[in-house]
Length: 574
Image 1 (spheres, rainbow, N blue to C red):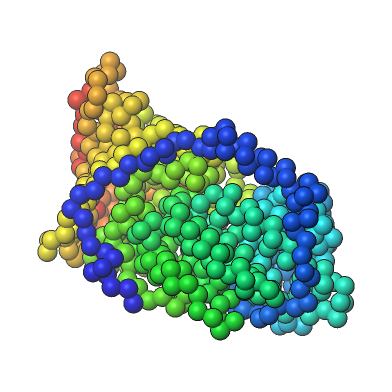
Image 2 (cartoon, rainbow, N blue to C red):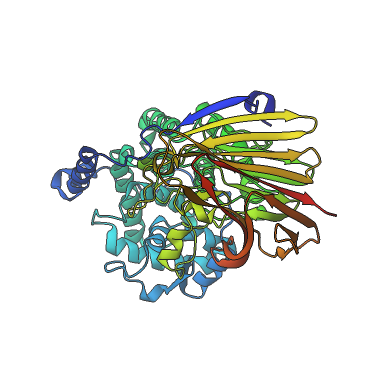
C-alpha cells in the first residue's frame, strides 16, 4: 500500500497557473497532423506496413476487467449497444457509417469483446465475435483510413484482440485466421510510427500500450521491446502529473489509463516477464489520485464531462489493478482537494481547467465542489457532458460543460472559462491561488481564481470549512475587485448548489434557508446570508449516462464595484 506520508502531505499554500491553456493546436501543428494522415494513402506507407506474417500469438493475456452485462446480452441478441444507441449487427454498414462518433469508437476499439465474454460461454460468443470481425476486416483491413486506423483505436484494438483471442481466432478457416493476424501486425507497424502524434493523455497512452503488447505477443517483437517501452514511459510522463493525476483532469480519463496499464501488465504476465518498474510506479501513483475523487458510496464524482462510476464497478477495477492505497487528499497539479470527516466527503476543483490542446470537452468548473454524507450525495455537479446517452440534445450536453452546471459561483451568467464551439476551452481562469489548513477543529480550504477578472473586474474567492465530525460545512463566496474600476454600477451573480438525486428540499418561512432530506433519512439545514435563496429544477447524469431530475439551491444577488461576500452553511440536523 502506498505510504500517505510520502504522497499526501498538505501544502499550506499553492499557486497554480494554466500556461498556454487557452491555445489549441497551432497552424503548423494542424498542418503537420494533416500531412501525416495524408501519407497513409501513399505507396511508401503501404510498404512500411509490410513484414513477416505471424502464424500465431506467442501468448494470450487475460482481460482482468468485467464488461457491461446489458451490452453483453444485447450482443447475444444480435445488437450492438452503446450509450443509448443500438444497432442490429446485421444492419451495421462499416463502409457508410450512420452512427455517432462515440458508437464508432466503441465498435472500432473492439471493447465490446469484453462485454460479450462477460455474459457468454466461448461457444455462445464466438459466432457473434467472428461475424463482426469478418465484417470489420472486409471493410478496413486493406484500407488505411480514419477513424478505423486512428492510432489510439488501433492500440485498444490490439489489447482487446489479444486478450479475447479465443473468441476471434477459434475458426478452422486458415485464410481468415491468417488475415486477422496479419492485420494485427500491420496495425502495430502503423501506430509504431504515429503514436506520438496523438494528444498526451489516454489517446497517446492507448496507442503505445498497443505497440508494447504487439511486440510482446508477435514473434520477433522482442527486439524492439526496449525502444517501445521507453516510448510508453515517455508518453506516460507527458500524460500524468507527478501527483498521479492525468493531464486531462478528468476522472474517467484517469480510470481509462489505469485500465490500459493494467491490461499491459497482464500482457507481460502472460509472457512471464516483469513490466518496466516505471510503469508500475506510475500505476501506483494514479490509483490514490483516483480514489481522492471518490465519495462515501465508493463511486467517482462528476468532473470534466464524466459521470459517476458506481462504487461496485470502481471496486472491481481497482481490485484488478492489485494496487492498495488510501485516497489522496491533495492532488496539487491534478487540482482536486479532498476533505473527509466522519461520514462526510467533500471534493473541490481547485485548479485551472485542462489545457486546450490536451483535451476536448473540458468544463468550466473551477472552485466547484461535491459533498456527500455516507452513501448519499448531497451536493453534486450535473456532469456527463461526454458520457450522456445519444438521445440527450446536443445543446443540453454542451450546457453540462458550463459553470452554471457546477456547484459554484457564476458572474453575469458567464462561464469562468470560455467554451469554444470546437469543444476546446478558451480564455478565463489562468491562475488559482490555494491555501489549506488542518486542525483538530476541522479542515479549511481557501482558493481564488481570476476567471472573471478580465471581463468583470472581480476575483472569485471561496472558503470552505468542514467540521471535524463531518456534520457542519460552512462556506463563503467573495467577489474581490481587481484591476481598473468598472463603470458598471452593479454586477449580477448566482451561487448554485446542485442537489443529488432523491434529495427532497423544503424552503423555510423566511426564505433564507431550506431543509434537505436525503434518501437515507438524514436531514440537513442550509442557510445563507448576503443574497436571495431560491429553489430551481436541475438534472444529474447518472452512471448509465441518463439524465435524472433533481433540484438546485440558487443564491442570487448583485455586487457593487467594490465587491461583495455571501456566507452559507450546511448543518446536519439529526
